[in-house]
View 1 (spheres, one colour):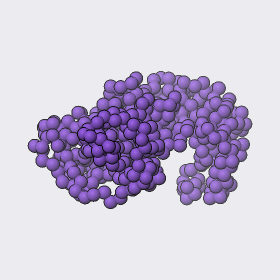
View 2: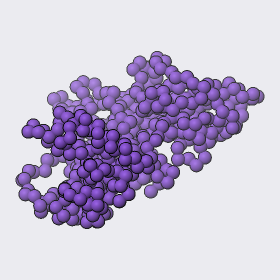
View 3: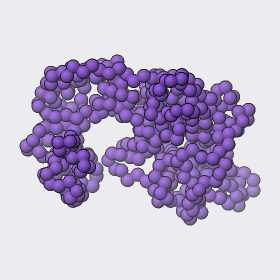
Amino acid sequence: VKVKMFDEKSSTVKDEVENEYGSYFTCDQKYLEYLQSLFETYLGKDVILFTTDGDAESDLKCGTLSSLFSTVDFGPGTDPEKAFAVQRKFQAHGPLVNSEYYTGWLDQWGIRHQTTDPTTVANTLDKILALNASVNMYMFEGGTNFGYMNGATFGSSFYRPCTTSYDYDAPLSEAGDPNVSNKKYNAIKKIVNKYLPDPGIPIPPPTPKHAYGKIQMTKMVATQPPKTVTSSKYPLTMEQMDMYYGFAIYQTLVSPSLDGQQTRKLSIPGVRDRAIVFVNQARQGVIQRNDKEKSLDIQISQNSVLDILIENQGRINYGHMNDPKGLVNNVTIDGEILTNWTVVHVKNPPNVYREIASDLTATNNKVPAFFKGTVPPLPAGQAPQDTYLLLKGWAKGQAFLNHFNLGRYWPVEGPQVTMYVPASAFKEGENTLILLELDHAPCDQPESCYVEMVTTPILNGTVLYY
């Protein structure tokens, strides 16, 4: 950070000590004092250190110090005069600052695509600037939660992971294009021009998109055992096993005294966040963190192998953020605690594998599994272009292009249907797409086992909830 500080060659003028810490339950002033001391040790005492919190007095009371510059954040539904009046109670002098002016909002799986009215966004911005306040727009350009880096929220005992797309209905889309026919971008530009001269710079056109077309997918099977297997008597969390992202497969041997196959109740009260249950490799069902009853009737016999594939769906990033993943409590069958677990970490596609012939449709359709395909080549001499991955018929999983993790897909949950694929993820020569499909592959027949790369995003698909 220090080398990027403000001088004649750079433009950093202040550094944020904490962001919305006032929303965290501890309200620990000594923690903030420690952070301030740490910043000053490395950056010196001439640097401007600031905090950002919501516009409630309780937020700033716990989120800042009198020795730090206090700012607020709010969106177009807030009266700027009232919000800045709260800032003034904690920051008597200096500029009024909205460090996060919300131009849109984030999407979460199963909830409708979030949008905000361009006129409302522009009108509130006008009120902010009329007060001679400073403002930072969050977001001005949308983004993408590539890999496993999406966050989640937790409220009213309900866990909500964010989508891979962080398009945010921002003035510029996650691809960097003026969003929704320029309406929000132009509305904001018009207001800014009331207070600052128009530099006369034309709006850049959208980046070119290419429809690469259909990509035939084929199931792939690892031919080498996993390198790392962790063992413990009782389940460990993923973090305790240094498995910070991705999936963990917990396995144990169930040895009840049974004659033949019987139905028993499996309980996983501490699932974080989504579990697919198998007995002797036969899929039994799914248990999710939000389920009221985190149990499942399973078919077992003597010496059955129980596998539980756990997905870390993203960590809570606001409020109460103690959010370990995997199995955080014991697992029971009819109340009896299961012991002697082995765990395998799954984060990336296998490096050594074989492909299954496409005529073996029953095997090819079985999931979870990895599927591999080759992207159709571009015309000779044409540079790679942005595109969107359309997974019609697929259910839920993870996508990789040339070993770059594009993120999660879950079109059956919505609202995000397509995945943004930047031009930078492509390479010269052959481009390989790999899917880790968890729930359903449309591969009953080879001709239906494909995905497409198209030119138009779909972020407002049908959702399960509201």
